[in-house]
Image (cartoon, rainbow, N blue to C red; front, top):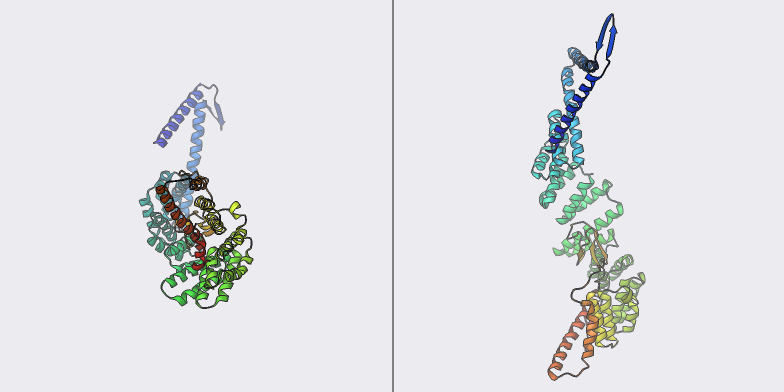
Length: 512
């Protein structure tokens, strides 16, 4: 509608301009005098302009006739397509002009205009391999997915445009969530163009979401072959796939094959924590503690992790707390300043009932970098040193509102996972989980939980005031319940890494 109004306005403007120019030439004095071969012509300004326009038109007609004459002569000399090329030349010019306008409209976000120009270009050019692509993309831009899919299916009929058609339908199926059909289309597109980076990534993502680890490894090797993934990243991701395959094999009860796959995953990427843990436990099952220790020490040197400490403890599950402390010294020496080393050491000292040493191991973490685990350890230390109930409860209350510490977080969508996985359970991105602390958001608690340390202290002060027998009985019951809760929280913190034995944890459950 707007375009029609613009054309009408332009037409009226041209009519007005021509009328004004004609009236101006009629009123203009003088003229043009032409004398040639004894013939003299006197023309008014208006007639001179008309004669000039006719002259230009005549020259253009002569040139066209000359071109037609040349085409006829070529046809007579044996060029059978000379005349058809002459008449098609004008159609091609119009067609390419419409094609150019369609591409510009597509780049400008005008989907309907682009489809109209593509249809016009198709009438002149008869080249669907060019016009169908613009039509399909313009239809997608306009929200006409039925039209887009129809055009993409037409592109499948030509070998030159088959890949474009498959890729277009693939994107539509992904948008619809039809991953089964999308996987088949991705495999077809990969077969047509195995070096296409986007198709490789899409196929790898779909294969990992379907737990097709063998197919994903083949795709990953193709990415390495065609140079779309660095070699070091390829080794890590191949280790991730090998570890995932080992987990599936273990779930099927094939322990020997699972152990071999886990050890292979650890060999490919010694710093991959889940692979190191699974490989270490495989060596433990084979009664090879030295190999298990070597695997854990190497991974701990790259990045300490609670699962590594738990696997290291599993090498000698029946040792005494003091013996465990002595054996873990090698682990702490690899990363002496890391927070995980300090926390595991503190937990071991608590198990050995050496509470001052546990406090020294925690150091300034409780003030500079507190989280729920650190604060719960401090509560256990205070309980072990005989601090009052108010102090212990204050540490536990702070733990309720403190960050949970490092967790498995997707680098792509920041989704937090309970356990490591090869692909993010939220965005399905492959190999994006990283062990780190989530960002702390500043927020006000509507429940007033941040006041718990003060409230606990106030309640403790009230216990010293005289009360009647019924109130005393209620307070005693509440106190016993709090004691159980405090002991359970301390036990949960100590058991987070599976470093302390059950018998050793019992020493922490001290009655008030």
